[in-house]
Length: 296
Image 1 (tube, one colour):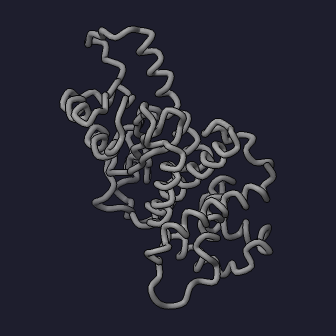
Image 2 (image 1 turned 90 degrees about the horizontal axis):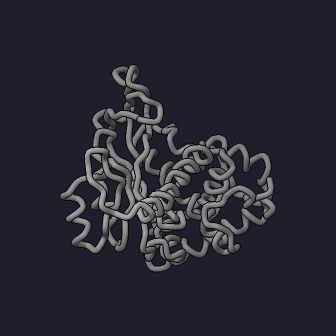
Image 3 (image 1 turned 180 degrees about the vertical axis):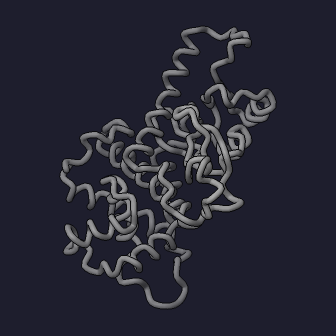
């Protein structure tokens, strides 16, 4: 679709959900409403993220230069950045509504995985002033190096819809996050070898959620090879989603100096991915086929 239509689609999606969420509980109980509406700000953030402009400054400059007639109340860059950060919670709530509307939480098969969100490399960690007592150390297997920062934890449905997301200190074991992150879903949960833990398996099974992972070399696997192969092919979809979040939405670039702004940045990237998935489903396209969605 043309970029103009994409912006309209995104705006309509945001407005519909924003109005439902704030109908009984308005965000502001006193004072003046901002000239640039919250729905316009969130629309600009989502479109900016999809276009690869993941910083407040680059988003503001892009819309100031190319789309000012569409957003005539766009003010200063600093006011835009403040309004973006203050809307982090409503973005999270809109994301949850979109998951429900797409039926992602009703899927019988989910996948879970983690990925690094480095603040800096280990050699610079001692001099870094960012996220003191919040970030931690961990090892990135893909780059074969230790890093200082956070780890993102992601759960997706069988067709790639992000159903839950969290980030934590990089030193936190991903198995310790899995229980809370999978609340409310039942069926089969696919993970890698890092999620192997008998206690976790039993705990999830009590909630009617069966954890399936490939086994280590010293473990006996009694499952059918075709069944295991099928599960692992489905699980690879989460690697595709993580790849999209990394390459298109730059989720591994922190570009924040405190947890509040970092939370906002991560929330809007997840929301941008979900909105694109939502538009795809409405156009009868595969949920995570972003190539060709917009003609730029």
